Length: 301
Image (cartoon, rainbow, N blue to C red; front, side):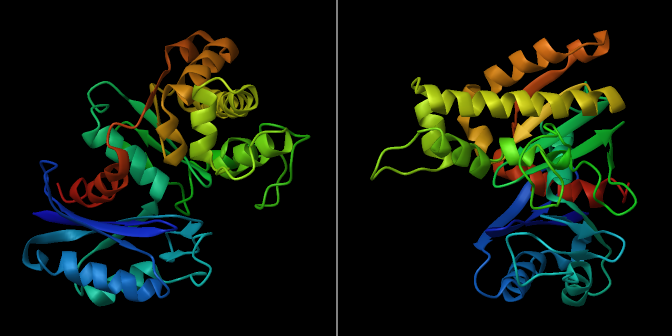
């Protein structure tokens, strides 16, 4: 049997057919476009239609917030989708198939656990997506922990600085206000980084940090320190083995990971927190698709 995996992001949608052995038979990615619902329908018919007879079900990882009970999503970067009935829409496109919804970062974590080589050693894994926002997901004992509404793992909205900036979510000093790509860039610009005529985005900030530009390095250090607080808080609650960092900012590699590992080691108190293994995603852009597929394939066993 085969799963149809769908990854709903703020700028692109992706879908793939995935077999129980992890083989990805077909993968298609499309920009969200001006009509996201039409893009979704095109993608589902294109990829799902090629394997309808053998499909076990559909797994969806979506940017949030979401309501897994109602099957609705309200991705921040898709303004036209507010309480959009994603599960119901996919069911109409593929009648008779079970559809399971989870957060995109939760699927990233599950994908890394299943196909990223962590499952053989991790009893508990935390996946973090550091990008335009900061999201997270937990896999405990090989099972994704989604919570009653499907929103468990929102590590980006752990408060790491009570005197910090107001977050769009309404709280103060959330991790996302310091460690997301746009937040890092805003802080760097406010502190003198950037030259006229050159790009001022997270990718350029990472390049400058890697070549030793002090303000850029400090922006990454601030992000690493804040991430370490949130990671250690989560690890203290769930006794985590592995932490996997994905998302666009993770492309900075050791520019982010080295200060992050150092901050985790420095801030860890209890002995069991010192065993945390922190690394970058092994599956890159496919982690979420593998996790979405696992929502189906693990249920069908």
